[in-house]
Image (cartoon, protein in one colour):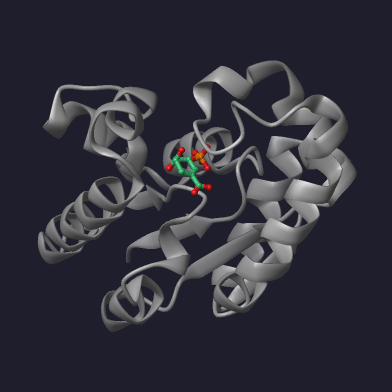
Length: 171
Ligand code: S3P
């Protein structure tokens, strides 16, 4: 069965998917990494040279390509993937095992503050404006994230504890 992890930037999708894949003995795929490999550019480079609309189109195309292989994997999405191109409906045609990793605004800000340059959507936002930006952004994205079958709160929990929680929901 394919398991899909989604959530805002820095919600822990990549690290949780790695451990989950190890424990369930399933291959792990990170959609951003897949896009970077296919396009031969980093995500910030794609945003910079081609713009966000191009990125969203490619994100949808590659998501479809991955799902169509029908191989059982752990798939970690980009933070915005659920919110564009009807991607949640597409995912649910292939699997219902979708997990929203729900992280609070203060925790997100704490985590993204020091790695803004890796994240083109927030790279130009001043630190003092981050709470308002992330708050509004999460509010807009919430309806998409809530379409996931399961919501898991991540604040103050270890990767190990979160993997355990995901596995319990799968049983
Ligand atoms: C984005 C999140 C990023 C990446 C791109 C856009 C978003 O992924 O896909 O920069 O729209 O939230 P991470 O959530 O892995 O940082």
